[in-house]
Length: 242
Image (spheres, rainbow, N blue to C red):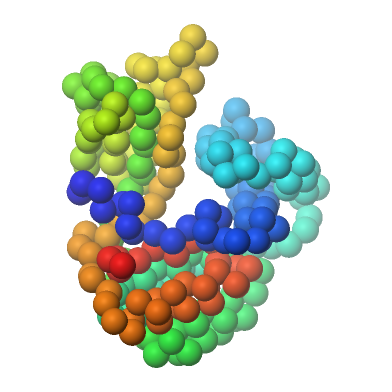
């Protein structure tokens, strides 16, 4: 699998120029996660991991706390997940993850991004079979064998593991995310059993990349910028090699 994951995604939460948009996207995701699985991070591992990522992306504590407090109320917006797939500039494959309170509006907005850049939106499953839905955990260390042994003992189906530049990178199926993280924490964590992960995410990783050249490069920039402007879009994954 190698370093393909480094090129696989344009993260709306990380590439947006406007901090307010970053905060809004994290706030919405934290709210949905807390409302679905509980507001206590110790009892909601997905929420804990999301809060950790938000802090790494310098989201202020008050934004995180506001989203959790909102979830405690039990009311508020009724967001649902939506995923769209299709072909972007240069026939690259694209997956777009959204959180929406109006699926019809979101579909129309996303479809417009495709049509205005001469791209084609598809149906569910159009391209996702060409991506691996993987958990990615990166931390400082050099004992690859110890990491692999810990993961295997925890019955984690490791897809790949790398040891380079003093860092270990673990790829595992997204369904094994929590098992993998717990196993690594228990083996390499500090006195509190906590390990500092440089990358701690679940992503769609393309099995193959597609070179984008010529006019398609500018078109791809426009396409991604249009998606980034949509409040409902959380993440965009693609296999374009720019």
